[in-house]
Image (cartoon, rainbow, N blue to C red):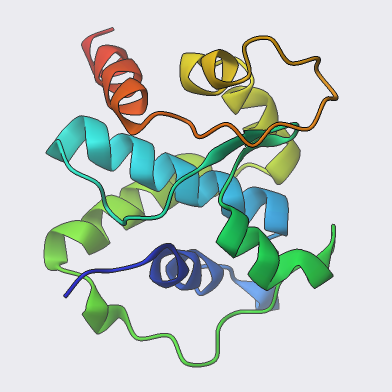
Length: 153
C-alpha cells in the first residue's frame, strides 16, 4: 500500500511528547516531511510518498499539507487522533524514526534555515527575491543527488 505525506505527517505528530512540553508547528512538520522524502530518495533510490515540495519563502512546502494545517498558523499542531503505523513497512518506520532522531530535536525556524543552505531549495528559487512568492517544484532528482552526496562527505 502506498503511503502519503499525510501518513508521514501523522507519524511525526504522534512522536511529539506533549506531556513533556514538546510541540510541533506547521513549519517544523513541513521540514520533517521534506527531510523524510529527501533522505529516502538518497538512501532507497525511490520516493517515500508521491506528493511534491515547492520552494516557498520559508523553505520546502507541500501545498496539500499546508492547506490541511493552514489554520494552525505558528501554533502547535495536536497529534493525529486516528494514527495507524501499520501503513508503513518496517524499513519505512526505521527511516522515519531516524529522521525524527536527527531532525526532531530542532524547531521549525532552525530547519527552515538549514534548508535555505541546501542546493535543492536554493536552485528551485533561482531568480526569485528572498521574500518573493515562488511555487517552483523542488526537483526530486536534485534532492536525491544532493543528499546522496552528503552521505559521501
